[in-house]
Image 1 (tube, rainbow, N blue to C red):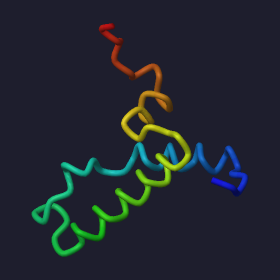
Image 2 (image 1 turned 135 degrees about the vertical axis):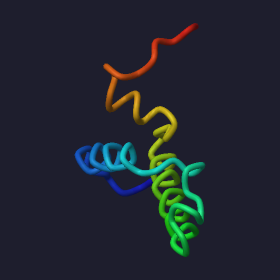
Image 3 (image 1 turned 90 degrees about the horizontal axis):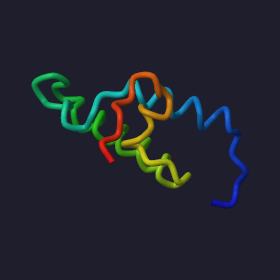
Image 4 (image 1 turned 90 degrees about the vertical axis):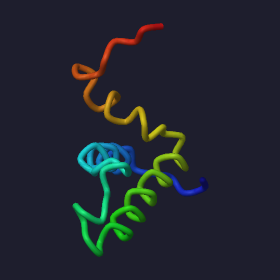
Length: 73
């Protein structure tokens, strides 16, 4: 990554990602013909987060620490 990134922009992306459906929830029953498009959009955002060394699976807990489950280890 060579371009400097605005920290507020990354924070906004993380917040928005928290409101996106989980990939497993995107079905043709729920999303119809748009299921493939929505899946691609989710994968795109996940990829951008990963490019910035942000684990998409940890984003919700980072944004909402009061709702994160306690670690068992």
